[in-house]
Length: 134
Image (spheres, rainbow, N blue to C red):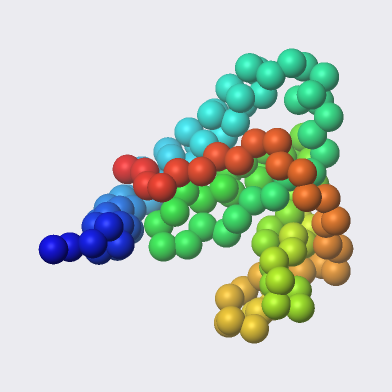
């Protein structure tokens, strides 16, 4: 009898393949929809809180995931600092990311943006998380 883990792995494989099959236009539309969802979130919270956002952490899209590049451009236009995950001393940290950031491989061979500035903030206010999208 297939286990819960087998079903989960099958679902993950199917979602990954579905994402990979999306055209570049469909992927861009998903990225634009992510920005619109964030803007809607900001309009749903009270104005002073949305104006207080100074730092955000994003991720680098991998394997057909929604690219946060449209969000990133928006944040830069708004003067909001954008951070990306990096491995620092074998632990997850967040490095400041800008158009001028340099890229280097981490201990796992994954490219990371580095400019030498790490965030010490750990508070999360909004975290869009999707197990899959089409």
